Image (cartoon, one colour):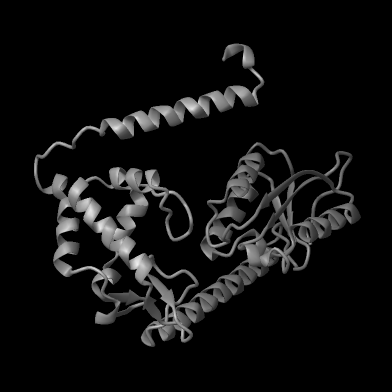
Length: 307
C-alpha cells in the first residue's frame, strides 16, 4: 500500500494495464485490471486522471508505446501514483523495475499494486518491491526455459514446433514436415524467377501480377521472396531450436541452385556492380498504385471538387 501524504490537494493517480498476448486477454482482462485499479483508487480517494493500456506487449521490455508515454507523463509530474493490478503487469525485468522505481522516486511518483504489498516510500517497502520483482523475473525465466525445452524435444523428433510450416510443406498427423508438391512447385519457381530476374522486388511484382499469393494468403514483397531464397530447409537442412540435421526428404531445390541464388543476392557486397534501375513496368505499376491511393484519399475526405 502506498503511503501518500494526504493534504488539501487531491492525489492524482495513473492506471497502467497490460496483456502480453491475444490468449491472455481473457485471463488478465484489460477491463478487469482497469476496474480493480479504479475501485482501489476510489477507496483511497485518489483521482484517476490517466489510464495507459498496452495490449499484446511483452513485460520483459519497457519499450512499450503506452508505457513510455506514461513515463514521459510521470517526468512531467502529471500524477503522484502509478496504480496497477499486479507487479508482473507493470514490468518483469528486475533491472528495469529497480531502475524505473529509482527514477520515479526522483520525480516524486510512487508505485502501487492492487493485489500485492508494494510501498515504495520506505526502505522496507522498496525491499519487498524488489523481492516481488525478483520472483516475477524468476517466473518469466522458468517459463522461457520450459518453452525452449519443449521446442527442443519437438525438434529432436523432427516435429515442426509451430502451427505454420514454411511454404512448400505441410504437417502430417505426427507433426512432422511433409512436402506439399503444389507449394513446392511455387518454391522452385521463385528460385527460377530470381535466377532470371536477379531482383527480389521484381520477382514479387511478377507473382502479384499473376495473382499468386504467399502461404498466408498475402501479396508478395521483396522480404517474402528473400525468406524463400535464404531458407536452408529447401536443401534439406533442418535447423530448429538448437537441432541441426540433414534430412534429404525435405529437399525441394538442388544445393547448386540455392548457392547460385544466394551468390546473386550478395553480388553487390562482393563487387562494385551497380544496382540496376527499376524496370519500367514495375515503376508504372507503382505510380498507378500511388495515384489510385491518392484519389481514394481525396474521396474519403469528400474533396470531390479537387478531383
